[in-house]
Image (cartoon, rainbow, N blue to C red):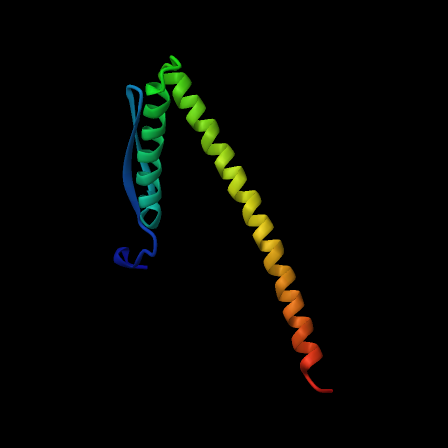
Length: 103
């Protein structure tokens, strides 16, 4: 396969946490998620530090990380519930269509 036909080439995304930088190689179609996620993460850390509760850098990063994990778990649970509801509706639709078809 030719190089210009690679379906999902990697791109570099630079992320800085505290005084360390990380150059990540991510799929090109996911680059925006990394950049947006990093920006949202930095903003949330800043918000926690500015809140006045005395969080230092490490505490704010840890709390933000936990909040992100909880949000992901919540979204996964919601997705499971939506999928179950969708499957019930499909089953009901199949039953209605089957009942409506003359024998």
